[in-house]
Length: 528
Image (cartoon, rainbow, N blue to C red; front, top):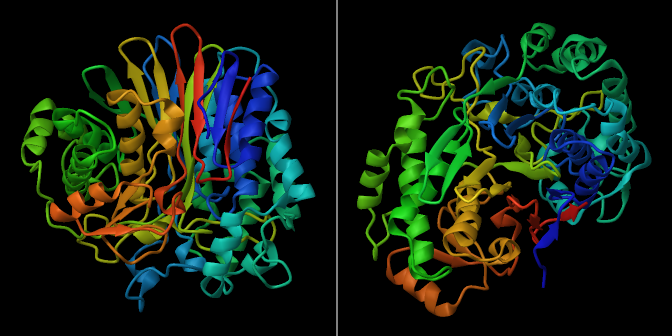
């Protein structure tokens, strides 16, 4: 049985143990929480390529004691050439290949902006130190994870035609096996270039020129002007105040508002005990209310029909909670979004904390690996519609809808909590499960993450829209949920990847740091 880890010197939680170790080692060298996260982010882009890459997006929440949290939007917009005319003859944006690589990769600029937030926190560690582990793993190779083996094999037929995929991410033309060594020498050279020339080289240097040439030659609408124009942005986080804590998340184009709404609604109707019918039914019904509003309002931040913070007012939350039937499920299904992502958290010995998420959208994103740089590019832009009148209609410079949303909570008693997960549509649901168990029902942090979870809707390429449960739930609970009108499917798994890879860190006012990771992942919680 896993137990919550405790320390005083700092902690890093990641869904791959090598990324967690990279962050921990930076903390041991005197680095701060942001520097540790940059090291972990670069490393996980190498060791977990099915989930994230340098050609993807990222979002940050940064906490410094005594100051308002800082949010960073490192989401790349649609290319200047990405319009309906570019896709003439297509009924929808292709899901894989060069035409799916239509939005700028924002994550590296997010690293740069986060380091600027931390610039006055003391002597900075050099980029050569922060990227050293990532470079070494790309050069020397990593042991392929079980999830990478499984997902490569599952999508091999669809991914193999994408330029560069087979040469970079297969072994002798087949899916690599768990434990096989996978080297990425071109990616190692790219990371070395970033370490010596600086992160801005990704957008305005030789590396940018190389990637732009490759993308254009392959058939993507991205051009060098798109690289030159891009910079990650500091944005105002959304927040909602509960009885004992204030919760923070990212604004549009993310679904952060849904994550906050679920927990605020549930607090109004919360169960007396965790993990029973009232707990699951309450959170599931709160999820439905939040998702309906999310899809009515969340799009490019310049096009939201109403300010999202207004959806988090006491009056609106009360109204949504009042519409929940305590014993009957609202009819579903619902068009769900899938996605593949990583969440990571860090806390340093000064109590500074980071909640961070990095993604390429679907497994391996567009599948396109650029010939010169070895950078795998995302397919986040496929969430745009080719209907110009749609809320999320494609147009140059618009940001795509994002499932990504890192979470942060500041408790009235002085605790700070960073938490999150991968899992597309499941992200807000898993956040709600973990936070409600820990904060509302006083479960220990590790148990809150380990306990059986559920998912309403579709993720990981599944087509069913029902309520999926891990098989560790009591049969009486399953019966009660079915009786209430939920379309329940009990998975033949006790710890399912379907439920995401969650993690959390809590910093106490006396300096104690608690951390926990998900047994569903290849990760770890490592402390100093």
